[in-house]
Image 1 (cartoon, helix red, strand yellow):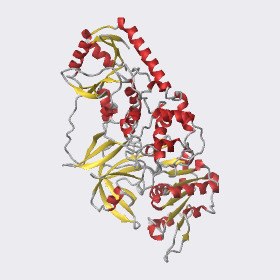
Image 2 (cartoon, rainbow over the protein chains, first blue to last red):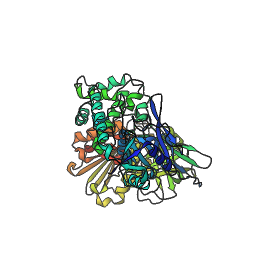
Image 3 (tube, rainbow over the protein chains, first blue to last red):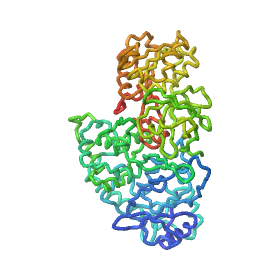
Image 4 (cartoon, rainbow over the protein chains, first blue to last red):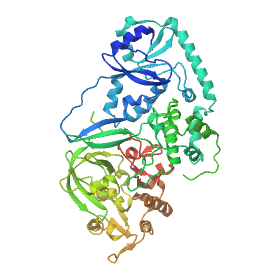
Length: 350
Length: 274
């Protein structure tokens, strides 16, 4: 859509104005990592707009780790309306996870009203990555290190400010409303494009090292490797902590839990992890995935086999968070690379 | 938009002891739940949690439904402590039902084991309701011992008298006791010497995973084609509506695409019998 330019002081003014309507979150840096922090009328302060994705995936805002989803057998309906959220500085790999979340929560016949209204009311002000992390590999699965869809407004850092792209009617309306804060993007577009090109090339060079197979050969490689000894090998260092699930922007599994409250009862939804022994176990004890290797395989099967078949995309956004979080040093890039190269020999019966 | 996770307040009307480990609960929800045979509901103990069950009563009963439950885990143990007048939660119905219209004019073979008879009871009652639409029904029931047979007064008595021409039974137990005069052997033995026109027959299997596995293999051995075999798959389900991820079976979710599956649709999937 349309391009504009906004300088840094004006972006700060815009954010201050938007804070009247939205509960705004933007990343700040601590210990060389980025975390979302709520920002108010004081503006952006030391927020980091560029650089790379935050530690938390944005599913935390739309599908929180622990949330009440129903109250029952009580009359008090005390659900107060919260202000819509705005997320500033979300990255391309975060936005890619909307495809998975939308598939799970906004699809007929069981649409979730909470999720849908959050999606409709929230504002996404995304931004280009200006560097990459050691574990980043988005380009290897053809996700660009700059947003191409699913944002309202995108910011591409250039000297003195940002090239602003509107990506939705909502974004366009905000730009129109605060039009005096914006300038013509004309002098900056070339610069933005050359920064994007440079980062993409550098990142492609970086991911070459991990020998991730070409995107289109990942699913076929997977289909042939169901009984591969690879999964037992990977399982050797897995400690079943579930960190890879929790931190993954595209992992969506959850478990329901009920509890009593003063009046009536409430139903909570919590993130669940397919690596945990109990995940697929049924009453009576039968468990289709008793072995850790089976559960690891299941995680990859869901991401690189199930999702391509059902939504035409991977359930992985190349953000590299799982690799960063894994205490067992399991590197998703390495698993994908081995998947494509190991011969299917010594099949183990899982 | 309604809240998908909100249970309907439901009164326990009656508790029937079927066997030492299995009880049937007669339930009356505040708002009627119109299920079709094979679909399931999520039943909750208020404040404690939910579990999925397929109703075992006739789908033609409007105001109440029955659920037959084996004491097997945390929630089912709490359910077994329920008494007449207690309040529980129900939501549903969910999932795909048995495709009754595809069974019309056919010879129908039902094979059930243990508490797996529950969904088949709902199916049987639906078939019996319109029995003239079907050529015949042969109901094969297997239980571990005579005291484990559920719906005793029905399978051994009442149902036998419904339509002697069209409806037949083969009842077996794995181990007999002194009172038992009937067949002894695994439920797979009831499939021997079938007197059906295989080309015009369908078979519906429900039971523990190991029973379903060997029954399916036996059915294939006697000449049924995978597309004539319907299975009810038991998987861990939390949400019941295809979101929580627990019951994935290849590219399906058992809760949303099942729990009733035609065998040819899932035979290629690993882990189906586990």
